[in-house]
Image 1: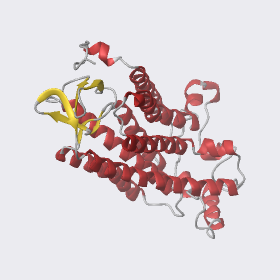
Image 2 (image 1 turned 30 degrees about the vertical axis):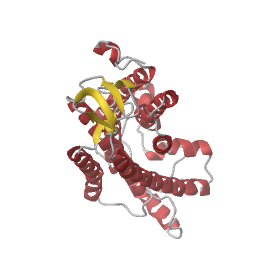
Image 3 (image 1 turned 90 degrees about the vertical axis):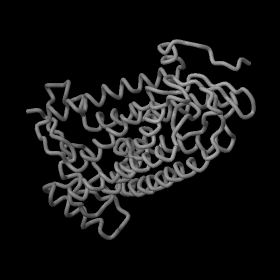
Image 4 (image 1 turned 180 degrees about the horizontal axis):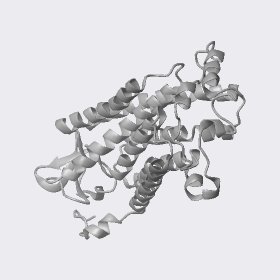
Length: 355
């Protein structure tokens, strides 16, 4: 085996590997879908920003940041020289010039953890029995952004970011004896790994708790599985992503991904762990009927929660305000019930009639 990576132009390396091409396609589709969402909001008749819109908008923003972070840096070549040392070549820069590597690491960690917390906040609020003041919700959203950003900056300061198996993330390999592109395994990687994925496992457990809680309510109301999937599609996407990430990372830690048998599995993992960049905005568009309102001018309709044939809130012929009050009263006995009525009726969606 040669102890050097084959020299290729940056453009060839940029599009090398089917998983990288797929991720680049994800980024393009995510960008287009998010632009459609922004246009629909701009054209909306009711410009009032609701609590739900603030949270879902924040989720979509950090979700796009996460998938975009995978575009500008990755490992293009990795060859083992001996049991201790490897040659690793990056798309841009090297072991002595890795500013983009550090930036990618920070953005991936910040956006992924921030998305976890924003999703938890979203489903915490719709599980609440009482509406929270908008100022408090704004503060909670800010904390869901500041806390992961603070963790990421601390990691950057202490040198926890660097070259990983396929991209720059938690530093798994460090520079060897001041030789460019020569790396050895980083001794403290396991510490940062346990902290990071321990935190994300906790987030996954909390998300599962809310999923069970909401599912109980929907089953109690005798809604179909199709209804469950439609209403919780974003929830399913988040659970799927966290499950794939945690399981893969734990397996690779135990089995030590240093052999070629993991190469294909790693590529599949990269594809599955980033597909939420497309699925999240797509689910938002479909659930809110944005395509219908943008492209079907004959059916310009006012999209409100009352128009849905089915909803998470039981149907009632009375006004939305009284319906919200009665729903809360009717579920006050069971603490675990999914409520969120006031939050949903507080302009859950923009008026997309454009009239």
